[in-house]
View 1 (cartoon, rainbow, N blue to C red):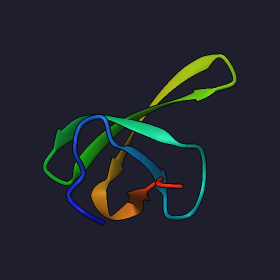
View 2: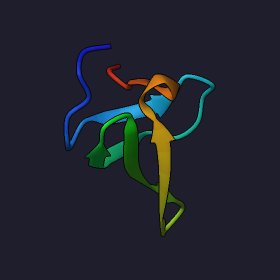
View 3: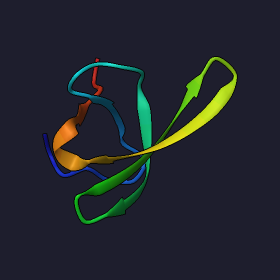
View 4: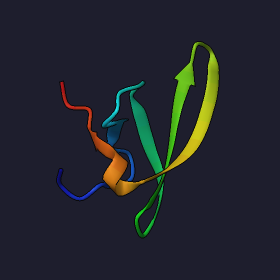
Length: 54
């Protein structure tokens, strides 16, 4: 994967919903996504993520 940038749409390599990158701190990536109508937030390491280009 190319370098992750703010605003990129990513997914976990293990699967899951599309998420938007909102924060980057080294290898720590902050993402947000919707679960139904509820906005969720989570932190992941860069190696867990891949681009969600369809």
